[in-house]
Image 1 (cartoon, one colour):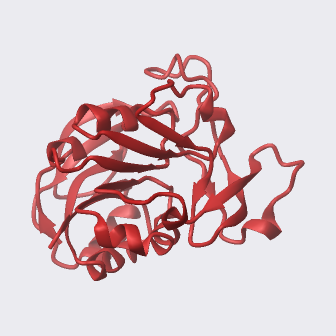
Image 2: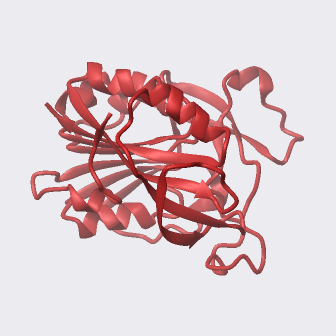
Image 3: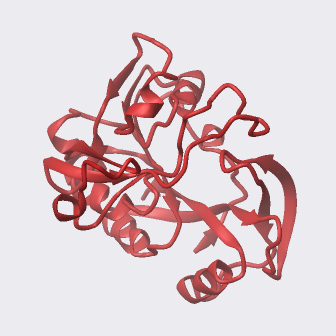
Length: 245
């Protein structure tokens, strides 16, 4: 993995990135960042009903109340936690969640009596959006399935920003689509034991505990092995920046 010290997608977007996809849009803050960075329109995908009330109306944002996946249909969406009263930095987002994800065996595991789960619409991005210059995915592990549902959009996009929590197979998928990949900042638990990192910031999380933002001090040698080792020592996630060719 090549190194680029890029912390936010706003640092690499150009005026040519007019149409954007925000997969896992949460409360809409990232979609607004895309507009501020020069996007003319954002297709925001957010399946969790509890997040929709925080979305601000904007003609330049189309909110799709659906999850991104490899196939169209219905799926079981699990939300393990939501923002509680008094969560530092998230006081105005009580009930919000950034931790929801589609379950792998969606239809069979859905239980209408389990309040942590809901039955949501699942769509292929290729069947909903005509074109996208920039694609951002933050799907709590659902990124490979979402990418499988957008081969046409991937072929036309120039910049990707894809969260990586555990499934490193997103990297060869992105590269096979013609992108050069770069790692960005690391997000760590405050009590991590990861060696060889340079902590640059501390941020409040929606889970009510502080997270650390850090750079990896040395280039990756064996990305998959090193990533797995860091996950066992307190690494939460990183994001993959991908640029066309």
